[in-house]
Length: 349
Length: 134
Image (cartoon, rainbow over all chains, first blue to last red; front, side, top):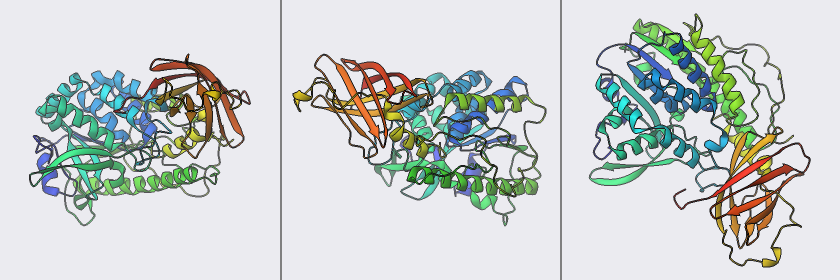
C-alpha cells in the first residue's frame, strides 16, 4: 500500500476492489488508450466534443500511457481543454526525452517528460480532480508493477483528494510510470509499504497489460456474466489501426518499432472486439473513435508538432461532427497492405 | 510513443547529433589535453532545426571532460572542445554523415549554431548544465 493513502490503488485482477472503487451512480464511461504522440487524436476529439457541446459528463475515465496523460485534463472538465490542446500540439521530442543520457535502465532518459508532467499537474488541477472525486466520479490510471508482474489501477481522485505536495508528486509519478515504455524510458520507482516494511516498487507502462482498460480481465471474459454498471461505453483509440507499409531498415530500433507497432494494432483490435461483446452482454451502448484511415500527414520524427497538430485537428473535426463515434469496432483490414504514400524520414537517408 | 520511441533513438543517434558540431581537426584547445575545465560535466543540449528535415527539436546529453567533448555512446562519434572563454566547437559523425557547429558556454548555459556538412539542415542549439537530480 501507499503510506498514508491505503485506497490509492488496487490490483487490476482484484474484481472486488474494482467494484468497490467504481462510481456510486451509473453513467457514461470514457476509456482512453495508449498511443504516444498519436494521443493528439484523442485530445482533439475530446476538445471537439466540448466545442460542439456534446461531451458527456463521464462518471468514470480510465487511461493507459498517453491516455493516462490526457485523462486528468478531461476528468477536471472542459475548462482545461486549452491546456489539453497545448500539451498535444506544442510539445516536441525535446520536451519528452533526452537521448545519449541512458541510465542503464533504458535507451533514453525521460526527465523532460517528468518535468513536463510536474509542471502541468498544478495544485489547481489537483483540487478540481479531488472535487470531481468527491462528487462520485472516478479517474483510474493503469501501470505495470514489473516486480510483481501484475497490473495496478491507481485511483487518482483519491490521491488528489489526499492533498499536499507528496500526493501531487505521487500523482506525477503514476502518470510518468503509465507512459514509460520499458527499455525506451526508465521505469519509475514508487515507495510503498508492505508488512511494515517500506520499499520501492518498479513501475512501467500500463500498456503492457492492454492498450486500454475497461474492467478486470476476469470480468471481461466471454465466460463471465458480469454486466458493466455504465450507461454507455466510449473508447478513444489513440493508435492507428491500419497497416502502415514501410520498408524496414536492417537496424534494431527500426525493426523493433515496426514489430511492436504491429503487435499493438493486433492487441487493440482484439480488445475492441472483447469490449464490444461485453457491452452487448451488458446492454450498454458501445462507442469507439479511431484515427481515420484517411489520415496521412507525414511525421518528421518523434513528437513532431506539425504531425501532432494535424492529428489534433483531425480529432477535433471528428469530435465536432455528427458522428464522432462508431457503434461497432472498425472492420479488420483485408488484402494487401496500403502502399506508402510518402517516404518517412528515419535518419538513414 | 510506443511506435516512435525506438525510431527516436535512431534519429537521435544518426541524424540529430548534428547540433554541437565543428571539426575534430579544428577543435580548440586540443593542446590543453585533459586539464580540468570550468565547463566539465554533463550538459543537456536542445537542437532546433530552423531549415531542413532533421526534426523540430531534439535533446541530447553531452559530456565535457577536461574541456573536451566526450562521446560514450557507440552510436555516433563526437569530438571537439571548449576554450577557457566558453567558445565551443564540436563535430559529430555517424556513418558518412557529419555535422558541425559552434557557440559559447557561459556559466551553466550556452547557445550557438549548427549545420550538417551537406547543408541540408541548419539551426541553433541551447544548452544547460545538468543538475545532480536529473
